[in-house]
Image (cartoon, rainbow over all chains, first blue to last red; front, side, top):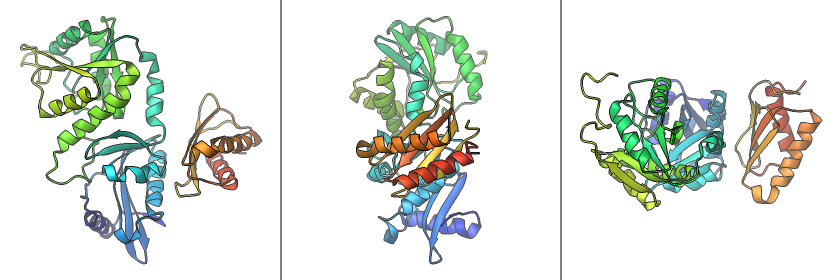
Amino acid sequence: MIANLIAPADVAAARRLIESCGLSFQPGFNDLVGIHEEGSLVAVGARAGRVLKMLAIAPAQRGGSLLGEIVSGLVTRGIEAGFDALLVFTKPAFACSFEALNFTLLAAGEKAVLLEFGNGFKRWLAANSDWRRAGINGALMLNGTPFSPGHRQLIETAARRVDHLYVLVSAEDPAPLPFPDRWRLVGDGVRDMANVVVLDLAHYRIGAASFPTYFLKADDPVAQIRAELDATLFASRIAPFFGIARCFAGAGSGADDAAMALVLQAHGIEVSVIPNPDCDPHCNPPPGDKQ
Amino acid sequence: MKIQRKGQAGTMQSSDLMVIVEPADDLVIEIESTVKKQFEHLIRAKLEQVLAKHGTEGARISVNDRGALDYAIEARLETALRRAGGLS
């Protein structure tokens, strides 16, 4: 019987089980559920928003129905909370356990995989299919800073080099502005450019805030693993749908951008860095710049 | 009957299925199954039969099946419809 784990003693028991399975306990969840057998906790799992995490089964109890029970409980709670698709990030070795539960593998990296329950990704593509454009298209990821003249310049340069340019934004980006405001500012900023489309990647951009690290080791390069998984999802699932063959980045990108570039290139996507000494979109706008 | 709200029933256990019913403009059935290749047409036929019996319209029916038999499909779908306000 599946139970919500709320009392401090139950949460402590969950933490022990999670840690004994070589995972780490990561606070920050909406639900923590477990299954007891003969008085001891044998299976546990958590849900943070649309993301399932910290799924752990006691070694002696594996291979049975416990994972299915825990995942059922979490998915049920997630759907009640209003999410129509649930995501799980885990080690590549566990991908098949989730596929057996009808999860779809969305992206596979060396140290992390992303799977989804429900047809969220398929529905997202369908909902955005009006934005498909023929030709050799490009993409430019805007980070969370407010739309600046530097962004505008970068977009103009990139848009001249492709048939259509997708400007990618997502609520998953770390940003000082709420997403609806950013969405409006970017839309207003490029309205007069006929071959530019602003595309909301929603939660199919893997942001640092929602990427759980419970299955990684303390010395794993978390930011790089996340960046590679994000780039894999984009390059293998999103770019082909929109005919995106080139990705643009502003100069002065960090090490994680280099990791992303390698993944994109491995999927046949050309990566162009646009030099722009005056306005680096990865930096905050200069003081006095209107925000 | 018209679907009024989201309703779900079932589990992801082996030999069971999870059904989610939500309001939609048309009647749409989405099936995921571990035995999709062999049995999707039979699962769909069973779902359609139950939906017709209750005169369900304007609903998206999402089914995640792990090899459930007919009576389980019928019971889970009817429960989800009831919870979605689609049964009198």
